[in-house]
Length: 184
Image (cartoon, rainbow, N blue to C red):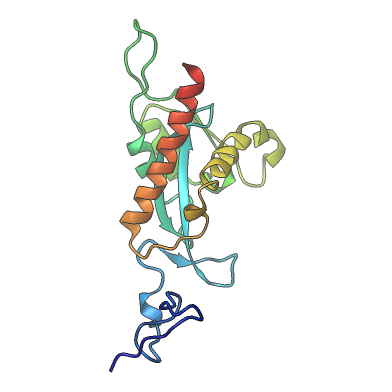
């Protein structure tokens, strides 16, 4: 038996469940590519890994669960970087070097860079200070801020990861479009 809930204005209240005393089961929340966030009391979350050029234009991104180590999707990110075009006399190529923070200080990350022909510049844990990396780190942080202008991406509402992935790709495309508009 269906029970329709009405708001004060006579319309159906869209915030309430449609069936009387219906609860959303715990298993339906979150979706794939989510994991318990270690910094937010174990709530489900998604981590966005990105590679940008020196101007902050996104080149590639990968979505994973919040409990995934940053170094795990590193090689997948490098695979997704498209070839970059240079001047007319220069062929298409990959970036020359890659700057990364201490989260990527694992043996597999520099090896993956070298396999792709990229010189790794990865900060080492316990040796280098974070202040040296700051002049390169702010570029990626600025790109994260540009992406977070899209309210839909700050909090993940979609259960399906392909939809969240599409919204992230759209946000990255808008950043590229805005950069191109200023250039021409």
